[in-house]
Amino acid sequence: MGSKEHRFVGICIRREKQGLHHQFTLRNVVDGIVLFSGVEILYDLYNPTIRKIETLKLEKRLDTDLSYLVDALPEYSTFDFHMEPIAHPAGTPVPINPTKMNDYLRYDLIADYRVGSELEHELKVEEKMQRFEKERHTAGLTRRRIFRSASASR
Image 1: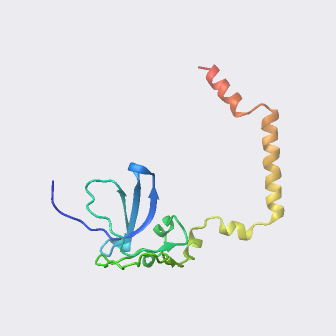
Image 2 (image 1 turned 30 degrees about the horizontal axis):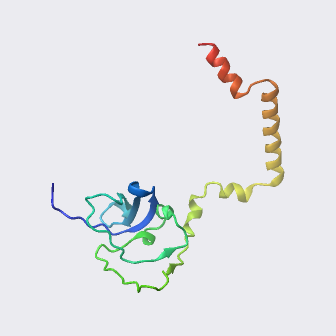
Image 3 (image 1 turned 45 degrees about the horizontal axis):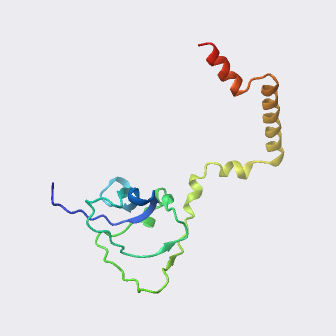
């Protein structure tokens, strides 16, 4: 086994599972990687090869799951690898980082539809769907019947 130690600094964007299977994901945007894309590393909390876990800056965010940082601008998840720990006095409340993302709208695929849709059109579409489902039901073309006929033909 090698004795090399590697240090990765990043923001914890996700915590998963519980107990001995607990995992967390750290993200950082590393320069030198093509187009400043982010690096995410999934760690097992109780991995014996991890020598030390250190909180460099303690803060709360408005969201518990920060997975949206994957699609966010690089400045939201860029941290210096030589960052020194910032002490947090015991007994004081954890500061809240009020940063809000407004960048998500370009990934909202249905936003254009919501803006341009009219209630009359949506009601017509819903009526057509109900008619279609009723016709299938009266014709006996339910999933159960289709599966039965498929299994009977074997």
